[in-house]
Image 1 (cartoon, rainbow, N blue to C red):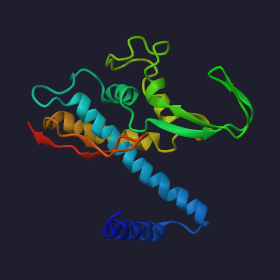
Image 2: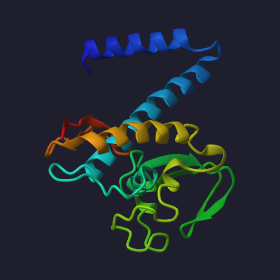
Image 3: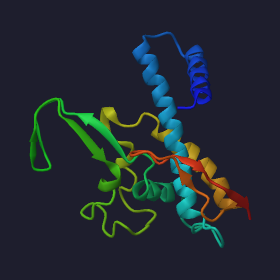
Image 4: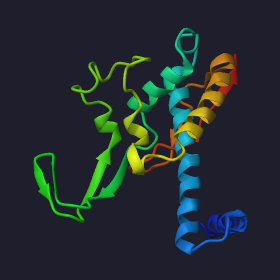
Length: 191
C-alpha cells in the first residue's frame, strides 16, 4: 500500500478517535468501522441510483414514481452491500445442510433479492414492488442501525440529481471489492 495513503488513513483514524466518546478500544474500532461502512454503503446506493435512474441522455426516471420506491427497487437489484457474514449461535439446518454452532455463514443479499419465489420477474425494475430493499438492510438485532439515515441522505441527493442532472456515459466506476459496490467516480452534468 502507498505510504502516503496509509499516513492519511492514520490521520483520519486519529481525528475520529479524538471526536469519539471515551470507551474500550474494541468499541471505538466498531464505531469507526460502522461510520466508514455507512458512508461507503450510502455512496454505493447513490451511485447505483444514478446508474439505474439517470440516463446519459433523455429524461430521468419516471416523475410519477416516488423516490423511496425507486431507491427500494435499486436496493433490491443493485445493493451497495452485497453480502454479510454471520456465525451460527446454535446448530441449525440451512439450505439442506446441518451446520454446527460456530459455523460461518455468508448471507448474499444480491442473490436473495433476485429470488423468483420472493420477487416475481426478479430482473425487472418495478418501483413500488412489495418488500423491495427490505433484505439489504437486514433485520432484527443485527439489522443496519443506519438504514433511515442512509435512505434520508440518498433521497436528498437523488432528488436533486433527478431534478437537475443527467449522468455522463460510462462514468460510474466502482472500487474492486467482493461484497461492496462503492463508487470511485460518478460524473453528472446539469441538464
